[in-house]
Image (cartoon, rainbow, N blue to C red; front, side):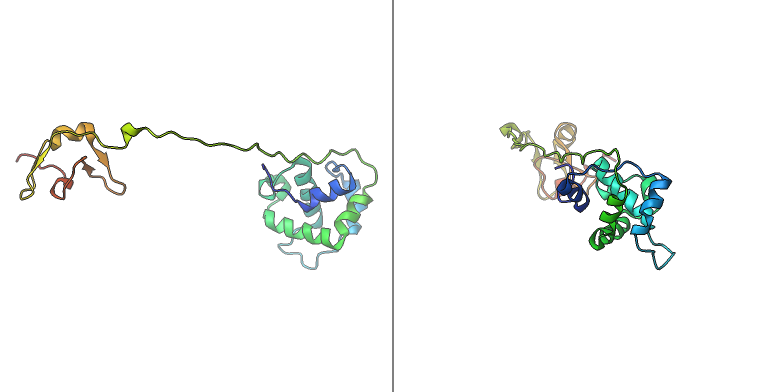
Length: 182
């Protein structure tokens, strides 16, 4: 699914078979403003118009709350707007505001796109299962290895978290960088 199913605002329009109203004009807002309770605080609270219009924009465009553009959010967090407008939906003022708009030219709720089942397959290349063999001699008593310099360019790789190249057939002394002649 491209967005979450079960949006209560989308469901409200779908259950009633109503279209989503277009962006509100100032006159339309004056008509529905009385449906919303007056906020008790003035600081950091989402104004009713911002919350109502954001919910209509979300439904009209089929977006998730986090995807609403900044001009709709007007500096408020998407979750704050969602909580505010969900309270309006639960107390009935949101539905009353939509009904107070009267007749309007609206748009249908966008469909919920469901992606088809995907089959992910892979193949295993046995040639990559083992490292290539190359001649190398290592003296366990000494920290010098023959063949390391030749193999370093063709068979070396880096171990995660290390910047030291290692070889295909490393032993503890071979794990150190090859010595250079002094």
